[in-house]
Amino acid sequence: MSIAVTGATGHLGRLVIADLLERGVAPAGIAAVVRDADKAADLAASGVEVRVADYDRPASFKNAFAAGDRVLLISGNEVGRRVPQHTAVVDAAAEAGVSLLAYTGVLGGPAADFVLADEHKATEEAVLASGLPYVFLRNGWYTEVYTANLPAVLEHGAVIGNAGDGRVASAARADYAAAAAAVLTGEGHENKAYDLSGDTAWSFPEYAATVAELSGREVAYHDVSAAERQEILVGVGVPADFAAVLVDVDRAIGEGLLAGTSGEMSRLIGRPTTPLRETVAVELRALGV
Image (cartoon, rainbow, N blue to C red; front, side, top):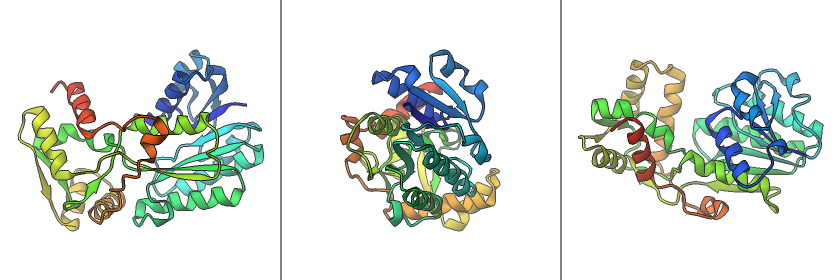
């Protein structure tokens, strides 16, 4: 039996594998399921088994899993294509007879009322239909989704959104990875769903103020209409369809749909989640600010 992690060379996948190793899982007991073996060369060198499979080629998953494996299906990043991609993994896991299928969905699960959640809800339905023992890791937002844009924020002195005074209970990507590793190595999680989010929800004006304080620069939040935000995003090269998804996410934030602080993440990982301020500080240092 192995713990198999799909998307293992992505940001979250690598952190999950690192956490599994820190928890004492033997490298040979971990399988990294990847599209490109070359990108997993470092994992292979550490003793982790590398299995090659592509979300877009269902047949490639035929030997990706073995009976008894615990599998973490990390949701793909190709919005609009994820339902068939995820279904291919679910079907392969069912055929192999894995002992547990964990899926990284979205905060709120079936109640999540925004476009980006639709593919996650469809994937959860496919998992339920498979009859496999499952765990739904309904992830909230990664703080790094926002700090990745710090160069532009610092350049323009502005955080721009259409979320109003809505709040986001984000956490560091490493927190979500730790939660996944806890489930994959623990017992008693079968057929459960966890709403995972940070311990504290913050607003975009608070985020802008935090960046300003830590960087020593003037940064403010500019709230714009949905139409203005769409135009801004398209103007900087974001495809129109995906820009509409991002605008809709801010609409959901404004309605409080991503502000929930259930405490389930901190209970799973056995510590508080990483504060917004800490992640901002780390990213600013990386930028030399």
